[in-house]
Image (cartoon, rainbow, N blue to C red; front, side):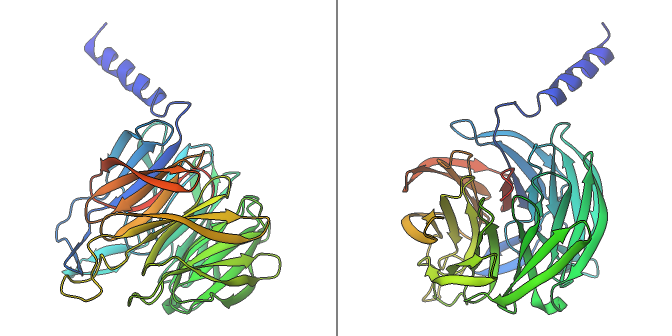
Length: 387
């Protein structure tokens, strides 16, 4: 057997076992474009390409399956600028920000999204969408994807067929300066929850064979709504309000999707700058990632030398959200992800270029001590749960 044939057989074997059948996949988008030093965010001139890290949440400790370079991704926007098909066939990564070609000390909005085949570990498409491509979701049936355009004021839709994306329409949510940040989907794919970060509004959209239409728009009940998630029951959504970032607590609000109204009062998480939020696959737990002063200059009276992750229990029968625990995390922390059983919680740390692993024992949160190094600032993360 020639060496060429041997190499071909090895390559085929590696591709066929790229993701074990029992794996619980998470994909982290890692930004090498921006860094933060003493509370100041700046671009990195001549930065190397951003990367993704593919993780197996079904193993203990959590295992890195593989990494891939040249997958543009940015910390700009909520840490939900990556989405995975429910069958774990593809991942899509959005890049909201790029270095200004005319001035490498500045950034401008980007429009690129990248499709990665998770079986072959290869980039299969590079497409463009609205300016500031940010928070996205793939429908649970894998037939379409929606992307928020932070500088376009739009939600953009792509159809998906055999892993290939094609533009399929768009809808205006607000003016470009509304900072449309994320679109969360119900599991049946018929309802979308859209956050308008700059106007403190939430929009509910309907999705059907005719396309997308706005059903309602209302106040977020707080300041700077960012991340959103729809409960598996399809009746209620949770939206995280970042807050003003001046020592005030971020809040989470519950939305009745039938009436388009808030349920009860906003729930404070106890720390400022509620950057990332995710729900467990069964809808019973919520992780909230807060900067908590860790992004302030060290001479600021609000500076704290760590962020905080907050674990909350969600009771869908009573629509109550109750804090059960919190834990110290890194600096400029971003997204969170749950294993399918809700017992493992990942938190991304931008400054440390790593992912922190916690254990959820029925509401008790324990730092396992595992730190997963990634190639860049850990900026966005998602599993295939469809949330």
